[in-house]
Amino acid sequence: MAAQVSVIRTAAETGLSELFDRLKGGLPGDVAVREQALSGFRERGLPHRRVEEFKYFDLRALMREAAPPAGRPGPTELALAFNQASAFADVPAARLTFVNGHLAGELSEISALPAGIEAISLADALASGDPRLAELGAVATAATNPVYQLNTAFLRDGAVIRIPAGLAPAQPLALRFVNTGASAFSTASRVLVLVEEGASVTVLESHEGPDGIGYQPNGVVEFVVGDRAQVKHVRLNAEGSDALALSTLTVKLGAEASFDTLNTVTGSQSARHQVFLMFAGENSRAAVDGVTLLKGSQHADSTLVVDHAVPHCTSRETFKTILDGDAKGVFQGKIIVRPHAQKTDGGMKSDTLLLSDGASMNNKPELEIFADDVVCGHGATCGALDEDLLFYLRSRGLPAREAESLLLQAFVGPPLEALENDAVRDGLVARVEGWLANRA
Image (cartoon, rainbow, N blue to C red; front, side, top):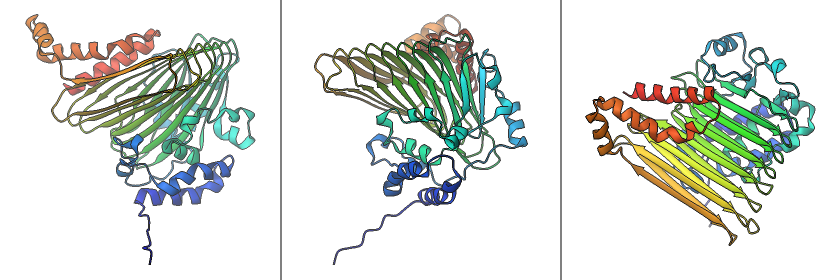
């Protein structure tokens, strides 16, 4: 007699499945698309350490319970979001504010957006069947990712933003995500940014939330970048101390386009930021950078897949990580070069400073090359501060902590100094300095 095999589900897996069955009738858009996205989860559950892509970020173990979805913000939540200090408050920008995953028109500046830029609520776009939603899910490598699929199943709101052809607004567009609540909750938001041919734009993205609350944000930002368009994207994770923060960035690049993104992480108890970037047009370039500062028992994962699907494209990935206490860092980078993507130039580098014996870093760079005329490489380093450099600075009269802070700032400096917007750069440098001061 064959033995009966039953799959044991965790409380979070059972809770997510039950939540979806209860909520799906009231979610905007095509429920069949949501059902299809959740089918993999129903079959396999949350990804765990035996799933290669999640070997160092065991989501099944990290998500013990499925937090209930946050509702549309009321006056109390809006007031809290209004009074909370914004990460890029000193940067002149047109702002869209999302509170608990919902676009908050009261706290946004939709009417003040530069002439020509269109922005509407994703919930409204889903309800009306907006034709621009055909661009959702433009990057195929993200489609089977379980975190992305969960976002597709549960997403409620966000925005659809269009930058018309040839437009180059002088000020950045700031997407501010604020989470508020007195107990655990979850959010699922998505922003689709369509940058048409020849346009140029800077997009700032910040994520903030309360300390001491185990909330669970799962956000996706998707860029579809037209031919000869230029995008600069800066993201800051300043989530609360107990947050389990999941985020995904997808990018589809046209021909002769450029895309630069920098993700800075100082917040969350556990965070995973995923990047799926696809070159769909020739002679394009992309730079994917990261700065991660962790202490205590924080855990952060940076995972990226760069898909060179066409010839003559260049990609660079540079990640800087500083770990203190018992913090854990993860870098997983994969460059894929398709069979016809000749003349590809790709390189990635992960550098880590370990400031304590309890800190640990897992690096997993990968190259999948199916073409023969390419230049690709990767590297990873882990180490402590150079004692000779510390001695040199201290011999000039600097206290030990100040000398150490100068070296740490120099270590993470290159990705930050590459930012062209002075106010954005100064804001992130101030974040780094604040982290170092709090550590001291």
